[in-house]
Image (cartoon, rainbow, N blue to C red; front, side, top):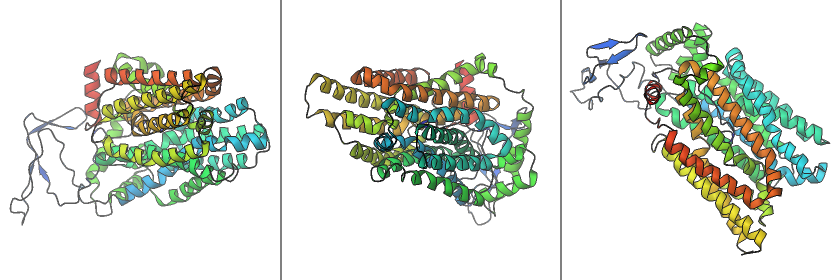
Length: 525
């Protein structure tokens, strides 16, 4: 919910402009014979217009090699088709335990509300602080995550976040008063703020280009899975016992990190040559030839070091302002749509509309996972813009139906229809959000910033998302006291504005290399 909340986060500045990652296909490929070509200033080969790559004939092939690649297509690397992706998938599976932990932290407050208010004696406003104070810790985590990941490494940063998460959950479990609850929630917030950055960065640095979109979306999938687990299990357990749901992914993450390699790009960036090659070899397969990819990574990192150090004021230069507007704008509209208000107070919303809070949270938990998985499948097929447009239209409809149910309740109209209308509205909202507005802003944000600006721009976008999350989640109870129907009508209006924003400003990035995206953005400014 930061991807839901800041799912998340910026891709590392160490990503290659042109990925040399292995293909998912394991067919034998010949080396590609190259036509005459020029080279740019960085040494990258430029294909001449109209040139095509032609595979060299191999003994026994009898010419049956398939059609040549389209004009301008990058050649296959020597290591492609020979490696194995099992370590990439294993590493991603371990990393997304952090995403699952993120989801449990966000989803915990909804099913725990009744029990905590009863046992600790919190008022609604005090519980509003408990729900929203998570974002205070998350803002601090977001501000420090980039620096931590660059100094300690991706794995150690995830390990640190998991340890802090364990302390946070134990503090809540042992809480006897509001202050202990707040302290534990702040620790969990710091944990999620760090994970919201480092998990997507780690995945993007180890993943081949042809599966990067799907693997990046797994971050959001597991955030939703964590929320769903908290909703469903929270309906069956007490709020103290529910702490176990948050501790388990932390434990799995701590153990799993012992068996996966560090990001090879981070290792190369700090000059650990031996570990860099060992990590890359492990990710690409023991029989894979990584020499060309390793050389390209090292050459590209050297070109990054030649760039001037990015400053905050550089974000507002004409060459960067469009990307900043798109990235920050998507995060603002993501939060103004009300996702964290619904995430933190789902049970309260259902109860206020006359529907069972426990049953409502269980139904949300059931639909979120398959819908998010469906969105992951569509990410590299239908395109980012299409998903955003459909998703924001759906969140508009969901909030409007929910607002309508509260309006009918306040006016004493269609009293038997009110709970069903609220249920349908909230389920439509969650389904629409999970397929687009949850994961896509983070994917687009990781793609549209130039290499030298990614770290600082990613931190800014993540911070903006957490600030928006705090503002919406803290003010929600006051808005509901003001006018329940009006609150959801405001959220629906924000979703309608999101449709206009996406249609007017957001670029399509599907099927483009990062370099091609940058060229198209320059042409737009």
